[in-house]
Image (cartoon, rainbow, N blue to C red; front, side, top):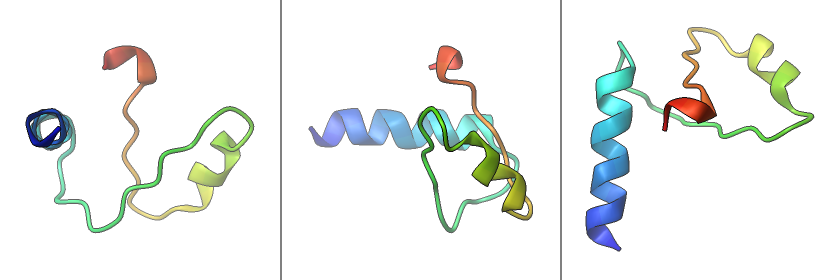
Amino acid sequence: MYDKVMESVNYIKNKVNNKPVVAVILGSGLGDLASLVENSEYIEYADG
Protein backbone atom coordinates (compact mmCIF):
# COMPACT_ATOMS: atom_id res chain seq x y z
CA MET A 1 0.00 0.00 0.00
CA TYR A 2 2.81 2.43 0.87
CA ASP A 3 4.34 1.99 -2.59
CA LYS A 4 1.03 2.86 -4.28
CA VAL A 5 0.65 5.99 -2.13
CA MET A 6 4.18 7.11 -2.93
CA GLU A 7 3.57 6.47 -6.63
CA SER A 8 0.55 8.79 -6.41
CA VAL A 9 2.54 11.42 -4.51
CA ASN A 10 5.27 11.43 -7.13
CA TYR A 11 2.73 11.58 -9.96
CA ILE A 12 1.05 14.64 -8.41
CA LYS A 13 4.39 16.33 -7.72
CA ASN A 14 5.27 15.99 -11.40
CA LYS A 15 1.91 17.46 -12.50
CA VAL A 16 1.66 20.59 -10.33
CA ASN A 17 3.76 23.74 -10.21
CA ASN A 18 3.30 24.49 -6.50
CA LYS A 19 3.68 22.34 -3.42
CA PRO A 20 0.09 21.51 -2.37
CA VAL A 21 -1.01 22.23 1.17
CA VAL A 22 -4.50 20.84 0.63
CA ALA A 23 -5.85 18.48 -2.01
CA VAL A 24 -9.52 18.31 -2.94
CA ILE A 25 -10.73 15.45 -5.07
CA LEU A 26 -14.05 16.23 -6.73
CA GLY A 27 -16.38 13.77 -8.36
CA SER A 28 -19.16 14.40 -10.84
CA GLY A 29 -21.48 17.18 -9.83
CA LEU A 30 -18.93 19.02 -7.69
CA GLY A 31 -16.67 20.39 -10.40
CA ASP A 32 -18.06 23.93 -9.99
CA LEU A 33 -16.57 24.00 -6.50
CA ALA A 34 -13.11 24.14 -8.06
CA SER A 35 -13.85 27.63 -9.41
CA LEU A 36 -14.04 28.89 -5.82
CA VAL A 37 -10.53 27.74 -4.93
CA GLU A 38 -7.68 30.25 -5.27
CA ASN A 39 -4.42 29.13 -6.90
CA SER A 40 -5.98 25.85 -7.97
CA GLU A 41 -4.42 23.33 -10.32
CA TYR A 42 -6.37 20.72 -12.19
CA ILE A 43 -5.34 17.19 -13.13
CA GLU A 44 -7.63 15.41 -15.56
CA TYR A 45 -8.84 12.02 -14.39
CA ALA A 46 -7.92 10.64 -17.81
CA ASP A 47 -4.29 11.72 -17.27
CA GLY A 48 -3.87 9.20 -14.46
